[in-house]
Image (cartoon, rainbow, N blue to C red; front, side):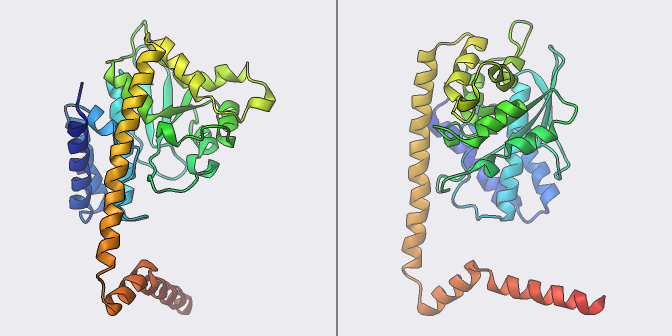
Length: 298
C-alpha cells in the first residue's frame, strides 16, 4: 500500500515539471512529461490525483493544456498496466485522446480523460462530451470516458442516457486506482470488455423513464464481479479516496487563502494593474487591432 504523502509527492513533481517545461514549446514539453509518466515506477501515484486540476494552474493557460495532455498519458499508461496496448492519439480535432487494444481478447477502445477543479461550479453534459466520444469511436469497439468518480452527477443527468444510447463506459479515476491497487491485469480469466460494454448491457434492462438515473452503483457491482472483489473492500477504498480528496481540498483552499492575503496588500496601482491583467484587456485590444489590420491588407 502506497501512503498518501507518497502519492502527493509524485503528483507535486508532475506539477513542478509542467511549470518548468511550459515555455519549451507544447510538443517538447509534452514529450518530457510523457517520458516522466512512462518511466515512473508506480503510476498509481499519479492516477490518485490527476482527476483534480490544481488551483495554481491558470484557466486556459499553457500549463492547463499540458496538464490535460498529461492526464491522457497517465490514462494510457494505466491501460498498459491493466494489460492492454495503449498510446495517446496525436490528433486533436474530432478525435479521442487515447486508444487501447486488448492483447488477449482482441478488442479496441478509445478513451477520453477528464479532470476538474474542486472550485468548479455545477457541470453539465457538455463538460463530459459523452456523445462526442461515441462519434470518436469510429471503427473501434468501445468508448470509455474517465472522469473523477465523485464529479459524476449523483442523482440523474442526461449523460447517463447518452452513455446508454451510445454505449459509452463512464469510468472513474477511482475505479482505475482500485483496479491498479489490486494488481488487475487482463487475461484469459479476466475480460475487461465487460466493463467497457457495461452501458450496452444495461440498455437492455433499464426502462426509458430511468435512462437519466445515475447507474454508478450498478457499474461498481459489475466491476467488483469481474475482478472478484467485495463491496466491503470497495467501500473501504472509497472512504480512503474521500479522505485523500478532503486533504487535497484543504491544500487547494490554502492556495486561494494565500492569494487573498497577497491581494489585500496591493497598493491602489497594483490592484488596478492586476484587474486589467485578469480581464486580459490589453490582449483583447491587440486582437482587435490584428483583425482590423488583416482586413486592410485583404
